[in-house]
Image (cartoon, rainbow, N blue to C red; front, side, top):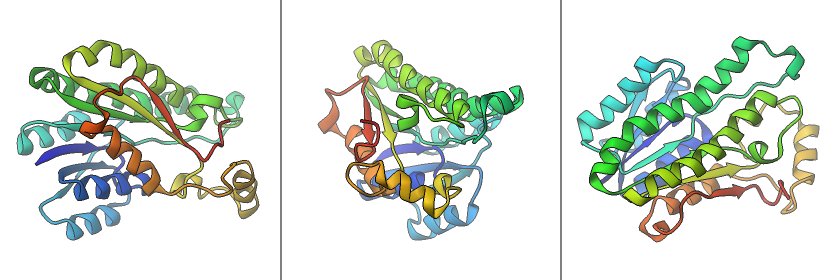
Length: 240
């Protein structure tokens, strides 16, 4: 069986990705920092297939421990899905340097470090898949979410640059950009605000975590071996 390392596995999107990969025949190591209840549910439902590892992605030592767990127990990682992310809903002028750095630490820095840790073995084996989870806001930007938008845009740039570096070694690197998805991150919006976001989505509804998971699974399959360096929107046309 193959092994997938998925960050943010306790969230709606991360949990859906984990379940999809398990159903596709993977062992899944799921990194998480909150919502341990959800992780325990996944471990119970998928005994001996899903393994939750608590890790604060602001901490280099905990990132290394997360990778170390996967390497020690499974030997190698076939698919790395960098889904963990935090938001910040503030005007740029009200955003502190500490808050800005905190968003980039989780959303970008941890993705860089985990990719670096996984790549040595992927390059040695001559195969592997890396998927960064960005956002529609990384493409079009969002007022009151400058730190978040900038961090997600950074992942798109990282995808394209890293793909040029490692695709000759057999590793495909891609990026998925969800739009408005039914998740905890969007729970802060009022019913009226969600209705407005839905109205701006051409397909007329918000997306499901499972729809994001399906694309991630496809990009990590052999069917996508000729796809690399791309950023794919799963947003119902929101970013058009």
